[in-house]
Length: 391
Image 1 (cartoon, one colour):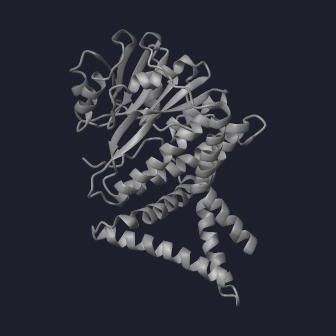
Image 2: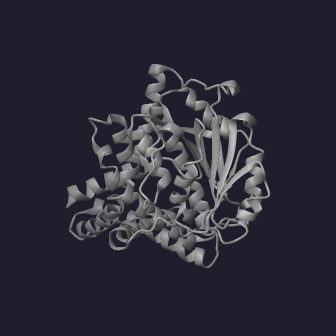
């Protein structure tokens, strides 16, 4: 039991902090040996042709802002196409987009899910690069330039932009927790990219070489993750570009964030089962290490190990002369009490920021457990149940 407890805690620590520490140390050593990372110039003349693709479903509340944001992006006009696809939308989204002749609009009344819409849109994309972004996110003016400049490197097959979550001083646990999570994720992606490759891209902002795009199965939940990882499987790198960022508001509340996290967790399990070949370190020596450390542990065993370590700790603490295990149990219980207090305070709309992190951490791991159960017990639909966002 003692060995199992220690191993469980080591894996939990490694999943959420240890990998980040190890990655940082490896990067520091790499910079000492090979020198600092070279600066990539914004060579406008060498930029590839690009299509910006936005899949929008019933986004009339955001769509005008999104259109204006897209039209103001810096990129050579003769090299950029804008394509919006609104399949299944039953509000005014298609009508609003149709008022802009600069934009190619694709619309059909049937709703088959985001990935079906993306596949249909890709039939109309003939540029060197394609950039995907969500309808309710807003890009910085130079985002496309910062992304597409990487394609001058023939080893780059995809580019992941940065996701930023906007929240104010009165943010609730969902907003503050999500914001902190994405700041940490951004640091990991930056180091992953510098070591070798980012492990999957987020749909808020990512790009691929058109020639490497591979349609994924119609029931795919995390289409952005799968599309980018299939390119990585071909031996190309996914690089991270923090100077290209998409900003969105946080989920409306914790319930909406939990709904989103459970779906992502179910999609994570689906992706792991479909990317089994990436577990082979002989075929993918560095990518396999990054994939298991950054994604697989978090989406599979770690939430179960949190429960196991607590149960084992209770048993060991009851034995005589086990003071060390009692101290450890006290620390575990204290952490979960802080998480419970965060839950209580959130329900009473009392903002105590120190409690947001343990509360969000526990909610995130609960979502993984719920997502795994959902994946194996319920038929998973690829049609998103949109989480409501703060206005």
